[in-house]
Image 1 (cartoon, rainbow, N blue to C red):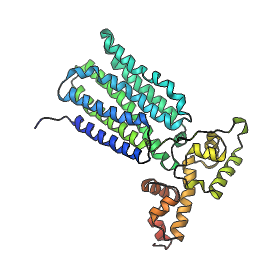
Image 2: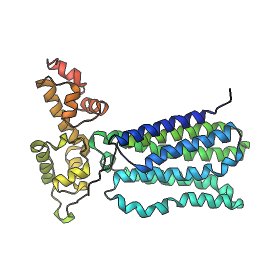
Image 3: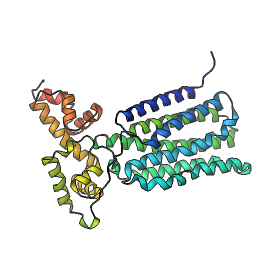
Image 4: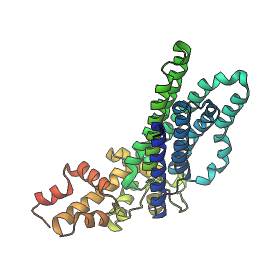
Length: 341
């Protein structure tokens, strides 16, 4: 039986992951192209790693660094689609995000400067990781286009993606030092295992982040001069929740809420954070859980029916938020209230 490197199996799993994410998109999920490209690129990089360290095909060293240089920009562009209100503003920046790969190709061509790749590539990863963490500095509220239901897991996945970039940069630096000190004695193991872990983490993070599907609706912000006070903002949002039950919209996100209230998204986020100490997704999910508790107590509807009625789409997110608010699972809540329907 021919020898197959571990990285080949990882590549197969990543391709299966890609197919699953695409199918979810066809069923009404997201089409975040940078994240989809990231998963495919990770599979390609895993194959290159297997060829280099499994079969000692040295020529792949001229391709792998170029592919690696595309990884951080893809992560950043995927995050940016979930954060910024105008995707079209980023069309022109595709050229700028190709600069890292162009720089690596230039260093590969200039033989005398080839060793600089070992420093430049980690620098690219660190720079983009910092830029992603900067986009995430406002917490889940930074994900303006992500439905409130999935804002927290998507936020965590993106932070993990940034940390994976930092881990990959640290690994590249360790390999560089290993070649300097021990002539690469430990490099094969570090590269084979470390890079595979980083690629898997990035791909899983991308798959989770695809939940943060961006809306195709046009964003309309209220003029800055018309921004209401925190008290007026909270009153407007409370009215939307109480009278129009806006929280029942499973696709509700910060941009959509801002359009409904005709209040800038940043003002809503700031007002809720200052007044309640919560982010907007937690604030909205509190209304959902409050109605869910009422339905579980007063009706015979199943937990799944209640979950869908109040605006959740997945049991994992519903159970997580239910426990956050009540410290109980939905079934436990119903039993404690004497309703076993």
